[in-house]
Amino acid sequence: MNVEFVEHLKTQWMAMIDALEDPLVLIDQEYNIRRQNLAYVEKAANPNHLDLREFKGKKCFEEFAGRNAPCPDCKVHKSNKDKLRSSWISRQIFEGRDLEVRVLPNVDGDNDDSLIVVHYRDVTQQRALQESLARADKLGALGKLAGGVAHEINSPLAGIMAFAQMALREMKPEDPHRDDMKEIEAAAQKCKVIVEGLLGFARQDAPESVEVYDLVDSVQSTLRLARVMVLKERIDLRMNLPEKQIFIEGSKGRIAQVLLNLVTNAIYAMRDGGGELEITVDESDDKVTLTVRDSGNGIPKENLKRIFDPFFTTKAVGEGTGLGLAISYSIVTQHRGKIQVESALGVGTTFTVELPKAHQFGQPGGS
Image (cartoon, rainbow, N blue to C red):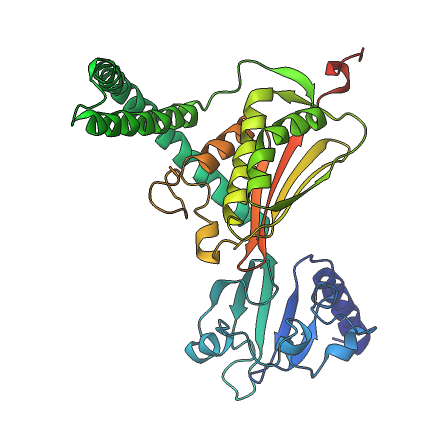
């Protein structure tokens, strides 16, 4: 086989490898880069090199991950030692990204300088979709259960409240049991709120009262309801709303309920200390984005995945049912939208709601 033919084959193989969208690298046992494809250079944390050849001999964790030492979850050495292929999900290479790392060790046989192939695949969106589908399945099952439980509780609860109110009307003010009866009525009222929340959460069907309406006007109306709480907690309310109308399609009352839930939670996160509450409405070609940002305590990282689960709450006992965000998630999903959360302790929390814009023909005045 002549040298010219070998070089031609090498060029073809490199062209095929460079066509891959996933980063691919060949390293030695000291993490030194021997070869890499174009995607590895383009997606590196330190893309300061103008030429592919400038990566050669550099440490992979320095040039690709932008670290001073190997990633803590790196299994390259173990895989090479065991002479076994391995794969794992790493969140330590790039912040906010999930990378599936696959390792093929010992590509040069058993010599002391055997090389290792490392393949990276970004699975952030895939994992987010899997989590979203799993959450939707779980919420659907819980919704059916919650609806059944709520209906079973409703009848005896209505009886308790009715008899407690009748007894209170007949009791004299000096009756020693009057305060006890008031406690019974208050407890029944609290149970009623929880049952209504359960029924609201159980309604997983698409909204029945669908209308095309101006989201900007709806946000302004809803915030007027929360203004008293905002003033009471010494919170600075900032609204970044467009001057023009932005139309969406769905249940005006349910979307207002979502906003009120998010605003109430934000106010709770800033209680006693004040802070800044920022409401923003923005639009793109096909969607509307509603953002609620607070400067409160923030949510611990371990709680973020559970924040939309029914009955999960970070509030003190008796201060929340843990249904507000679960109901909000359900409502947004019913409207073919998405709701996401980002938070940092001591910095604050941002909830982002994305909803599809109303079709042009459905807007008031449209043809």
